Length: 219
Image (cartoon, rainbow, N blue to C red; front, side):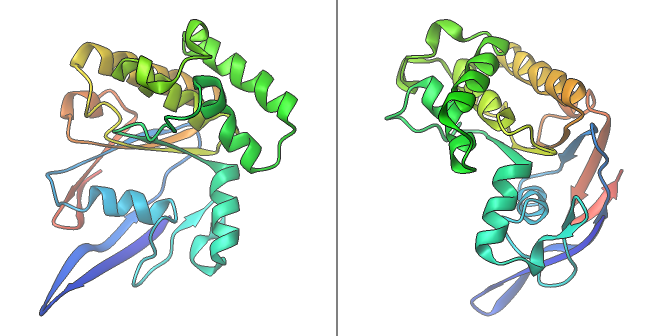
């Protein structure tokens, strides 16, 4: 659970991105965070994942207070325990699909052979085995997002953070992507924290948390 405050100082004015948000998320739970642009959704995601630090309060993940760790510890903790899915995929264009999926495993020193086997298994699960040696530029948006999901799952994370994962996709492709995230969440007992502006999609999650003006409006 967290009680988070985040303030940004802009020239002479103070902007409160989050004003004392308390949230607890359980294993295997798929939680949507919804709200208008600028409501604090992405700030909350960044605080929960340790990509940003709160001014007050603390983010605890798996019983560890992220704010008390060094930058190097946070990086390693994040790589071992978290998967990330972004709206614009963040795939490395110079690497093949297979190499992109393997990368997080190699970054926590998994043997290359094991990383490759696991990556091939995940690529098959997301239905892209024909594309494993292709570069991202050859893929459609929906295919790239499926690669991102496989990459997010490679280290068997405790939690996946997804920031507008369907924001760049048409509704049919978006549904395929969300169903895939949900399937992995249930099969692996992985918590998913999903930021979206798509209320219909949010309603298909286990919980929907509405953020407005930096506060939880409903949960």
